[in-house]
Length: 175
Ligand SMILES: [Zn+2]
Image (cartoon, rainbow, N blue to C red; front, side, top):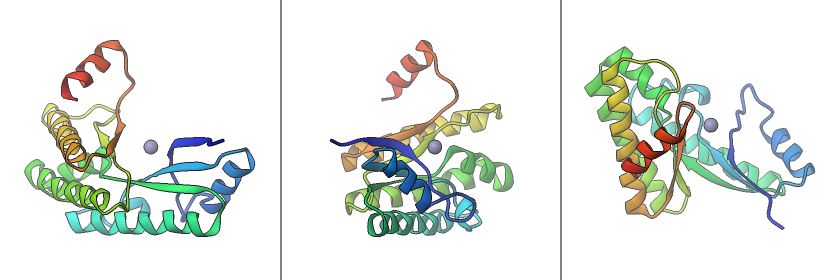
């Protein structure tokens, strides 16, 4: 029997990392979708597309280690977290941030095409208050991530604020 957790994060610097995976296994878990955290969490500055790409490569290495060193079968999900975009937009400007995040999402798509990752995520929008232009740009990036995923025939993993029926309907329009 397969017991899958479809949204699992690991952090080798401040989390339990492999021990968390082993706990999951002891509780009966067999398969994991390991979702990218942020470039910052992985020790990269998160100021340009290359930082996100390096962080995604780092994430793939974490997933490889899980597969090598634990009995759990792990799959990688890579993307750019909406909070990373917000942070970058506030620091370096909206257009710059959008451009860098789009390039990074294209890299995430490449990793899916190559079979190194199974989904693009987390993408979406912040769960906290931001300016209207950052909010709208986050939605545009979410849609861009969805279109890249469609091309690569892979899933997306979304990060959003709390949802109700109206928001699910809004999301349905984007999909
Ligand atoms: Zn998450």
